[in-house]
Length: 347
Image 1 (cartoon, rainbow, N blue to C red):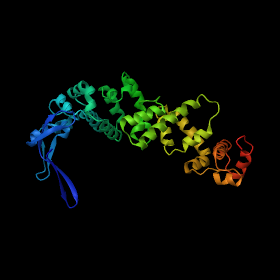
Image 2: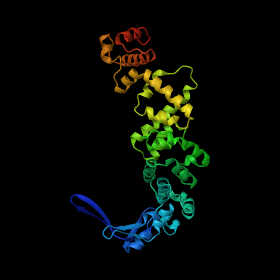
Image 3: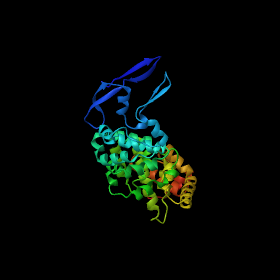
Image 4: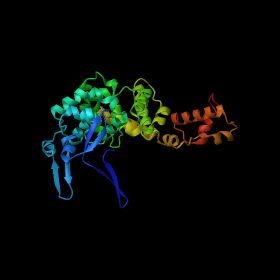
């Protein structure tokens, strides 16, 4: 239907596309039908000039019908032909323009920019949010994701994607992404996007991920970052640090990189002090964190049964209290913990 066949050669699949002209764009994403045509006309239907070149592997010749080589030389992103038409045909191209711009460091030329701004509010429902999320993922793996988000906002696309950013000043977006350079190298896309929503609650983080159709792992990560932010904020208001709660936070495999994300926008000295404080605390709680992560409590059901405690609600309460007391008193000996546990009201 689209002039494409798959050729299998020696167990490898090769996708072969015939030069074609797209017809009957009606949904803002793909043509209703095609007709066969020349290479030159095929090039004219593509998105950007830098993507409109053909290479002949037999003659070793580049065929350039859209001045793509010239724009590569100029280092510019330019829509092929009429930019409005290109974006009406496929509205995802607006986001792709920003991705290519950020990836190569090429500015988007003025007419193409104007067409993006004019068509930004037509992104949905033509484009599925899953496709937008895929583009975000590709951008985050590039060298200038901060600039990509700034451009998306400047070109009116970011508030369309995230309605909560409607009315947000460009300076605020720039401030939000300023710390990207301090992110851990393995940071996931959702951690970057969470910087746009610094006050987001755990519930709101879950809703954001549901909206973006992220994986469950990414959703859990976003929720954990939101939770850790709450703990960091609440610590300023408490006179005594809740080591029991922090031990559980630190036991999460994502704890260290989420701490780096939270610290990313801090001034250098403040960031160093913040991370040093938490790493020192993590070292002090290392044994307890390990037990939580491995789900091997110091006082378990078997030990309590030897002390005459029967399975049930009371046993569960005693196990939780034993864990709390072990962490708060830094106890790692079973007998010592039992002596202390027996002095509590829970016993």
